[in-house]
Image 1 (cartoon, rainbow, N blue to C red):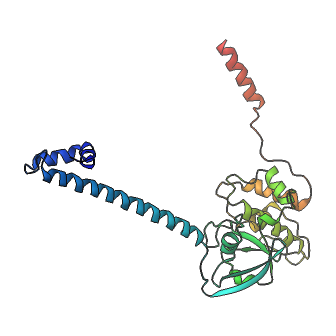
Image 2 (cartoon, one colour; image 1 turned 120 degrees about the horizontal axis):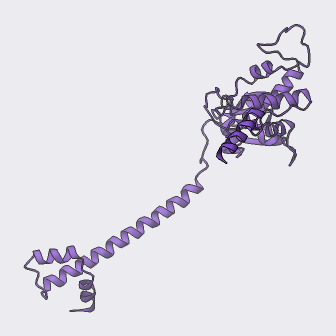
Image 3 (cartoon, rainbow, N blue to C red; image 1 turned 180 degrees about the horizontal axis):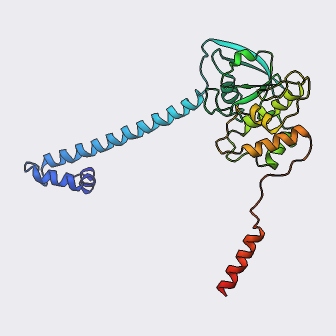
Length: 274
């Protein structure tokens, strides 16, 4: 028996040995047995080669797929020039692409969030020409020549915008998903009040020419389009009120401090355990 046949026989599995025992015509030293072992070894090498080829093709596909992440061509393409956070940008986008998708997918400005994608939650709110808009309902093509400010453009380097600072101080966020839209909406809200724009709850729309004074009810009404599932609304109102009034507003949240009654109860419990 050749070295090839001996190595093949040594690697014979239990199932292959049982198959040999079930076929009496394959003798222990016959030519048929050697032929069978040679074919089995060849099939094993063939399966290994197929497996390696499949892996190589998979790796090649993964490499090409990452390179082809950007679309080869854009249907209904239009070129839009706009100012994004103070920088001039020119994008060729599908005429049906929303401003939100353009910001997130083309400019990698992922601060603006896609929540409901139906204009109902406010998480995608950005500021276009000093007015807040729902970017999920705004076509990028309609922003030609306009100035767009996202949450990334509010801070001045490491210096936060006053509204961002107030949100941090008053704990105006919890999970943070809605926060970019909340802050952009609040910044635009302050400008709306300065311009004298009224809301549904404004007491007298005839006497408010400029600088509408925002009560808590006014803030709640004007921010009603921004949903916070965590329920941080009182803290959001406090943050906006502080920035609008220019005066410091006391924090509405504190660590629990036991009152006198609870302190007395603690002393009673301590005496009872002695």
